[in-house]
Length: 395
Ligand SMILES: Cc1cc2nc3c(=O)[nH]c(=O)nc-3n(C[C@H](O)[C@H](O)[C@H](O)COP(=O)(O)O)c2cc1C
Ligand code: SF4
Image 1 (cartoon, rainbow, N blue to C red):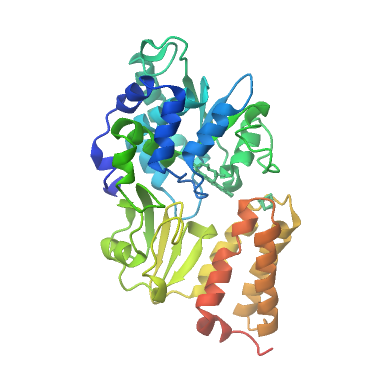
Image 2: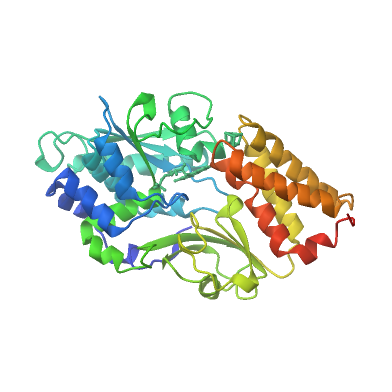
């Protein structure tokens, strides 16, 4: 699959080497200031300001520093990083190299989703060409002391390894289980060293910002959500695929573009995101609106929303690493509740208990997986109460 629609950034024609050459004419702190002024926020889901992350990593003390590209894309309904790795790999590696220059690192690691192994040959070929062109290796572009190279490591198929500390555990050869935070990876990451973890799309955008400048980037999107966003669109629409739109478009506008106007609901942000009913399609896709890592799943009028919730909960029961009780037990309890609803054995009172359990999971789970896994269930119960409560036994 390739991009169905490029938007203001990807159609801007950023050439390989353009961003890096600009960066090499700047000091490390000037690069970080450029990224800060662009307002770029991470595209991996959490929306952390990239300039702040790079600044913390630059200031962190450590004998070695690492730059990690998180290419473990495993959120159900998300496939936009795959397109970037296929068609824009140069810009991904260039973003890592610019990050390396900014934070003072010599080693980049791209952690590639296990199911994307078929991209390995292509990615290695792009890396080899960049080495041959003097864009990687020792003394990059004649800049003495700036040595940076990138290796690719394969993930092995666990969704939780996309969480940055689980990813680092996996890189170290351990079971992919999230760590306590703090300490954060920018201080204590891979092998105990300062590690900057960024999403594939974030790194592409960082390259574009260096090439075209922060003011150009800031002019796209909204005040709080600058730039554009890639969306992986699937489900009940006429034109599923990957689209680039400026941040801040409404869900209704997106549905019009993809031929999904008749939708009854849209799951924004994948399984860990939130289910938005048609009455709220005027909301914007932005950090200040409905935030998203980029997954949009469209549900037509014929969809059974309880079945949708069940599908997501089955995924989380399977993918919970089991390390903490709220997530290990909570996901199973929510799935059991759905099965009881299906069988006409769940009371309204029990459903309320399950909603309270979901809130506890959001508050007390150790990592983002358990903190967000009840979101779909809870938003479906809230927004589709007519459809769901009709199947519950009276309290
Ligand atoms: C369960 C889970 C899975 C995640 N999967 C990914 C992923 O596949 N890719 C990604 O970039 N971030 C993922 N994240 C977010 C990362 O932990 C981290 O915030 C991100 O890589 C930081 O990059 P950014 O600042 O560029 O967004 C995941 C988080 C959680 C809790
Ligand atoms: S929230 Fe879930 S995935 Fe995260 S550490 Fe706890 S059990 Fe593991």
